[in-house]
Each structure stands twice: as C-alpha cells, then as structure tokens.
Image (cartoon, rainbow, N blue to C red):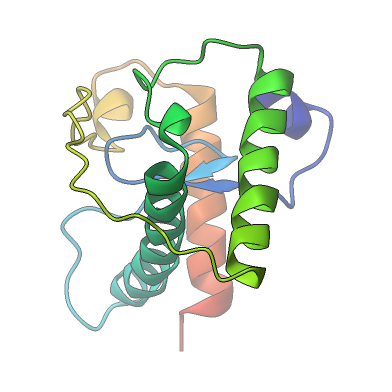
Length: 148
C-alpha cells in the first residue's frame, strides 16, 4: 500500500484498528473522542465498516484454516494475495452450492497488538511524516463527511 500511495494512488486505503499506526493509506479510529462530535460520528461509521470486514475475515478463517496459520506472511505479498483471492472465490462457490460452514471454536492468539496514541510520535519530537499525513487525511474525511 505504501508504494501504491507513493505512486499517486491516494484514493485507496485500508481500515485498521487502534493497534495499528495511522498512515495516509491505513486509517485508524480516533481515540478518546467525545460523544456527538464529528470524530465520534467518524468512529461509529468506521467501526461498522471494520466489523463487517472482521466478520468476513472470521468466516474465511473458519473455512480455510490456512489463513489462520501463525499470522505470518510465508509467501510474497503477490502470492499471498492470490491465496486469499482463491479462498474468497472458493467460499463464494460454497455459498452458491449451499455447502455449510463448519463452525468450530478457533482460538486466536494475541499477536501483540497495542493501543497507539496518534499524537504520541509527534509530541515526543519524532515527527513522522507518514503519521502527520495520515492525521491530515483522516481529518479531511471528517471535515468533508461528518462536520455539520
């Protein structure tokens, strides 16, 4: 995503939870926002979208256990994306053919995700240009879509 963004593809971004660092291509929710503010409304919509994504990922991981393995990329990003795409296509075929999803309890480990304060890097005199660009990008979305 970084290289796409660097080549001018600025209309695309990923949605991450608060364990990820904000970047112009990786949006995260605001932390500690007041109710009924534009940032709060952004977070509500953002969390609904993330919830949909997490449900889809969970269903795919239940059907294709290979997607659960170690949460480590064992292949190049190109090959990994082809594996995920193949799993999505096969899952859609299973839906068309009414092949049920076998639901088992899958224990997911805590992989060291942590809460990141977006302003922390800035206030510690380590201004990260990607973080600053991410803050600006997210605030522009809030200003355009969630400000009265």
